[in-house]
Structures are given as C-alpha cells and as structure tokens.
Image (tube, rainbow, N blue to C red; front, top):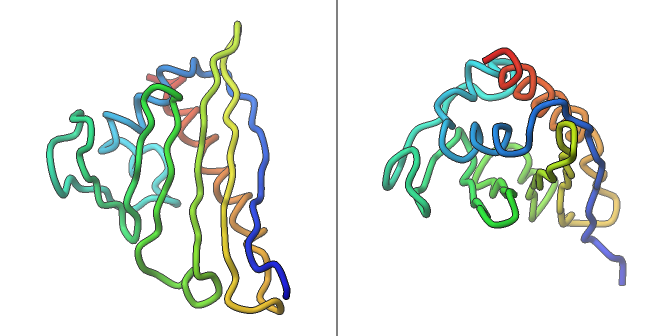
Length: 141
C-alpha cells in the first residue's frame, strides 16, 4: 500500500520580530492583501471580529486556525483547485523568536488521491514568497 500522505518543511530567517510578524497574521489580517497582493486578494471576517480569539476569517478558499501560545497558524483549504490533486492540503507556519529577528518554520501537510499524483512542491516557493512579502511589510511599518 502506497503512502499517500506527506509533509514538506522549510525554514525562513526573518529580520522582523516574531511578535510583530505573527500579529499581522493574527489580528491585522485585513492588511495581508496589501502586504502580499499577488498572493492574497481578499480576507473578510466571517464570525467574531479581527482581533477576537476564535474568530473565523475567510480568506478566499481558506479557513485559518491560530495557536497564540505557539505563535503558529494553519491554513485549512476549504475549496479550490488544490483539491483536484490532493485530498488534504494544509500549509502551516510557526514563528520562533530569536535574539535578532525570528525564524518562520513553514510546512505543507498533504494527502494525495493516488500515488502518481505529484507532491505539492510548487507551493512552497509561493508560501516562502508570501512570508517574505509580509516580513517586508512589517519592517516598513
């Protein structure tokens, strides 16, 4: 039986402090389309408000789950073309404070429908690009 589940992982060094980088994802989500317009076109609050713990924010095709204690978030894709190839597609980011800047640990958990389906390798550069755009936005603020 083929293993159809996998996880891609990488790390990105950030000059931005972990708390400021996480804050833009966590409570200033409305700024993301400005920070990385080529990657995120829209975000809206579905339940709660921008800063409320447990608020549901709908990004086009995605629901976001935050873990404040670990400064991490998981993107739960709910619809879109990724489901043509993968049964599960969950990008995640954990931000780790460092003495200077921070470290973003990025991962994409996935499950293929069949062994011949490709791994989602092409999405990691997209994720890295998005993180770097947001870091640049944080540093310019």
